[in-house]
Image (cartoon, rainbow, N blue to C red; front, side):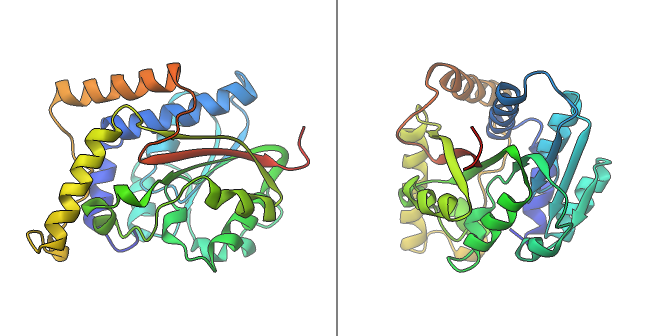
Length: 257
């Protein structure tokens, strides 16, 4: 999403309110808490942290050793506005950045979709190298090409994934997938209908590529809270689902118990 200043500005304004971000941040926090209990002194890196919404979310919940990196000057500037410890770095150059520092948790949400087949394995290996032996790599990813629509063009997303895309990728990096689930399963028919309609409009020229808009906007309060409740309830009662617009993956070093 580098170069999309308007999208970063929307993200900065809405991350703390929009149902999707809130649900994702809670999913990450729940994963961390299940593994590390009530510890708040663990080392956490958000790689590709965007405007810092997740780091701010974790900071408010008492986590004290947080760091972010991002390859967008816009994103880093917004993070600094929040008072977050974020460093500008091109993630393709991660292998040379603080090579001896290790983290308990590395989060890389909605980042892999911007990397080519040649560059992505190197990024995953660099992230794996930064993990402590019992650490976690948490990633959220755009899922299923059928959900591709106006949003993907607006944020510059180059690809969508299914779980099998990560099996060999994680293994080659010395990681093992411990949990993987698609989400927004309950809302997937609605999301799919919207995205397919967007695709039809783009295909027939009813929407021009230069005028596309992302899905990052705040709906009415009642709708935003309803969508948040649906997705939060899904996460509690359906820990794994076979379909959805996002794919949430938790991996650990293969040598870990």
